[in-house]
Length: 527
Image (cartoon, rainbow, N blue to C red; front, side, top):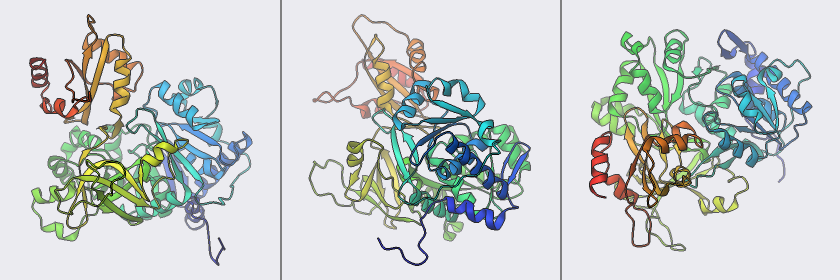
């Protein structure tokens, strides 16, 4: 393709270059009592890149990071691509075998690690560099030029529905454009002080590391987003923005500090995951926290759909406002379309049309645009299965409203979303059935007031076998992260279709959300 005057490769690294040139003295990042200006932040990132290059990192090499929302994780979003590497952020909540699989599948040759996770990192069998080895490096600076904007900038792993994590390939162009969309929709600017409650390992923090740098705002790093710490920052840290799952926000509204009344300013919060309840919205509003509902997947660089608050909503009743805010919304500003496809019950090869935009007819949500992944790393079959022509099938079932906004009604892939974390039920079921006493298992999500949903298992035992609920839960904890383990296990034969498929909807129909006693009686009575 012929280059034209003014052509430039789109990469979020451009945002750091601009911030350093124009806002070198503004605060880029804080952590505890430390502070970095944009000038210092940029130099540190380039020196980190130099350290990585000195350890043999070449263009295309995978560099994993095992850290919480600390300076190491934030700076790695710039330093790794500056070295030409591909960033692989690791979910520190996962069990060691899960992390090891991701490291091996990605082909990472080096891990950057915070001290608290060093023991786990060393068990993966590849080279590690501790935070102080790269953050305090005073060697030569390094900044490799990005020549192809569709080259990889990061790999983000998601369990999907197969139980096997899949590597979602992000490119520089998509990260750049998503960051611009985030800057607009989140209302980021020079006065932004963003608190890192959302994990940066998740969709590269929805691209906020790059978006806030584009806006030349300040990023406040945290070791853990516990309510005490978050409230301390909200009260005295000048925080203007943060993102969170409904669970985190519920914990904040139920914290003793909430009793001290509203904040002295409006704080903008993006909510991902399940729609916030009317009660939660009311409590947040009373505290001076303004919420925006977002929807997206790892495969879409985070939020692909935004429910933008509209001025006419100011006259709505509380009930009507809650309903309006619960809808997922419309494509973000760089998106090029969202559809609800009539795939329900369609046979392979049959033509697929859009559902009627009546807010009632169910279909599968599909998106396209510059912020859809390149594909799944080393998994062409999964990539092809996720597409219809140029459209990416989300696997979520929803409706299209007459105004063009979409609303999720169910999750076609049976994913349980607990506290903002995706749990693949098949993965949990495989662990359960690996126990010698278990013949079959089905895992479903049950509504929970704290976590939104929690996984619950229904298990059929082998003839003559005997095992307790507590023993099975302990068994799953040895192989899965804690949030993935079933919170309750019930024993009975599993309902099945004529073809032998387990009927999860029947199990859901036997469950009274939040009432485990009813659940237990109903299941055992129907055995």
